[in-house]
Image: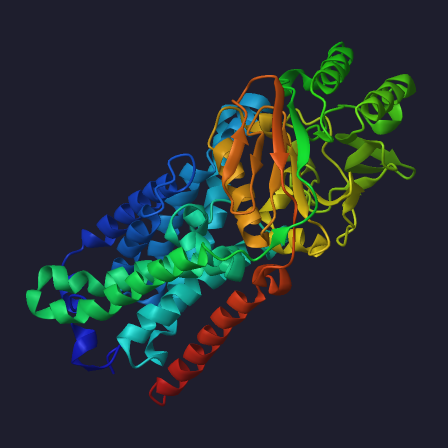
Length: 524
């Protein structure tokens, strides 16, 4: 039986026999997918062309039409390879330019990592092609199955092997009409909505070639228009409310080059620089970057720490300081401590970066080729408590942790302010800096909380509860960013339910289509 059933499904694409008559297309289509994947990155920061990922993904979905599961997986892989080779090019910068790894090995490692990530869009292609016969209506396939396969595969990418959900195309909609859906469905839902818009555009494509098909475009175009208007309407909803008085903050950016951060003789200069910044930029809350003090807490001179306490007490302030710490039994933590008018509190980073903060089994030889002074940490608790500072509950997260929205909300709704401290100097002047800022903006949107970012080299920023940047410090400069932030209380739907409504919906769609596809198979 035809894959989509009926005459309407047959109009979707050229017959398979016609496609087979063009052997060159077997190579042209993957090459085109490679280019489409690479172009998709322009939808993310710093260009922020939010309208582009639905168009590039539409191109992939057009090529998925009538493709066998194996062929669809190949096309998805090619798209993913172009996407990730572009989006995570900063991995090469980290390993070679900063870490000192030989160029050939760093390049090959980056390519292999991109190829691993490309397996997830490949899986999405295979799923939608394999389960396509489970839907008699081709339109429902575009509306439900294709975006569900895409969003579910993206969720898996953010979970499997500790997860790496960087550069998800849903982040493109941090700006634009679809941003209103983030407090409801989180990044998984945003990935679904982006893919759904692409699939509906793909449904309209035959109308561009055959005017007699024009009437079939009204329903999908109408659906897209309604979804855009609904997103704009949702942007007007305030899911959270102001809590307490506005808080003055000072976000410090030391701009210490990564290759010099741990060099003997620079340690004292680093301590002096941050002390000067603290004293020169008073605020109720002063935030220093990740590993701002580049030795274990136990090795920091007691007199220096006491001076910081006295300076903060004089200013009636609290300090948040990134500093590693050690425990007996060779346990090391990438930590955050508070000093100041409130009692000392601490946070240990829980979600560690593979190869950067912990070494997967069998890869110590690989990590040994990079200059990583602190690279074998222990995970902190998965259920941390927010810090009570200056009468505000502050949810801490360190660098890469803000990729994981469901982990951020574990400290909510109690916490009314998010703080991310990062050291992105590892990635130089690359796409990692604006991309990470965009990720933090999505976390603010999802939670209805302001997000403060203090980084070593950039992007140090204050973000409001609507995900808008209210203050931004120039990259690669030393100084302090002064801002006033309004903490907020309450819970968005995403804070209450996390990714599970979106994930469950996708899983149910896939399961039903798999069941119906199996029933539709002719008996052997």
